[in-house]
Image (cartoon, rainbow, N blue to C red; front, side, top):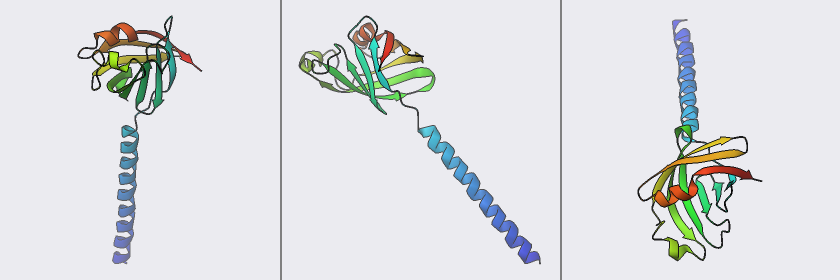
Amino acid sequence: MMLRKTVKYGTVLAYAVLAVAGLATAADDKKDDKPALKGVWALKDSELKLEFSDKDVLKISPHGKDEVFLVVCKYTLEKEGLVKAKITGLEGKAKDKAKEILPVGLKFSFKWQVADATATLDDVKGDNADHLKAHLEGKYEEKK
């Protein structure tokens, strides 16, 4: 009788341990799976366009035409709308002219806040990010 109770409690304990381990794994998976930004956004009264195309890819089109010039970045979304980005490539006809101002590997960050179909990009920071700050900061409208 005592052996039967011991086995029963041992089995219950084993299931409880597995359940707790499963919950911890699920919580870790959700913690690492940060939300991605999405959509195409245009700076009000400007040609500049931002496209959050993949989970971690940001494309910046300063002239609204990708064939002219496109800045490709890898980004992460941190707490409170802080976006950390790194330029991974330059594309388009004007890429050679821009590579000294916006070199591949340049890291920068900015705050991204969305309310309805309007977003605000501000607080651009980074080494040699003054050019980005001057062109990126402002109010954006979502393009459908």
